[in-house]
Image (spheres, rainbow, N blue to C red):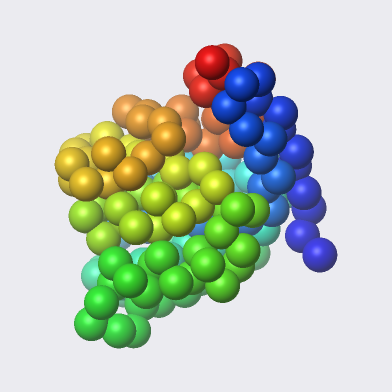
Length: 159
């Protein structure tokens, strides 16, 4: 069984997170290359959660880029990437997943996950994905930082 992090957010929810599912291009990577910020935080993230990278692998670089971290890589195979990403979250156990993405094909994934984080990075963020999220971050370091320091998550989501 994966590690489990329980985060009690007053007047919002108690999250029991096991998995972090990350889009690759536009989220962890720019033009197929893992960003330095993502590279620095993937190790600590993997120590705390089961980390998955889900991607169409447009540049063919994901496997080599994330190999040092021991993450699970899911390369999308269907013609419906939006549905395939959401189905992956459901297979893992949606309430126990945090998902991070920016593209239009990430909207259903973020909506299904127990915690959905939209990222407005160098590629921007699709409006549907923004609206499906619980939190919006400007950079991947901010998003992963929320998952590594739960007090930041509590401060953002408490009501």
